[in-house]
Length: 208
Image (cartoon, rainbow, N blue to C red; front, side, top):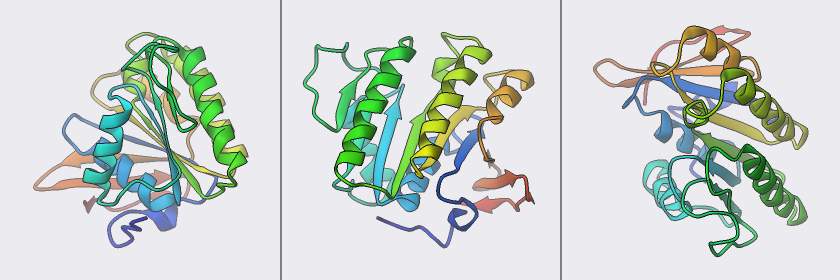
């Protein structure tokens, strides 16, 4: 995996924690998520509510700057309905972002495959919570995220999710912040920049 240590806040994200990347459109949230997933785990499990499994694999290689690892799982929430597409141990189809039950079941299926194979150094990416908020209220998404982040923490893995900062009101955003150990904000000034906010304080804006 590409550690990307010179730019990303990997030293400030402990194994077993969950971080939320939030920012306006075109500020690099998705790329930052993929680069963090690549840097934080030897294996990767991506849940995508916006792109199909093949696109996710291509994006990972292009944006994270490294080939997907042997253990590269995808829960595809958009391309086909459950039971209609060819699934493997590492690629599952949830059908729609509206089906939170299927997303949870398919995530658990891939996670169990990872455990069976002995993968322990795993980073999980979820792109994007904003899609879920198109179908459900903040409390319903919060409950789903609470369960998901709990599974990640209990497994000793590391989780990264994205949400659009300009698509939702402040109350909704702060509701979603709660299950996460830290928040990474993105913005575009002269360059795309991020800063890490955690219980230990607020970091400096850093170009990526």
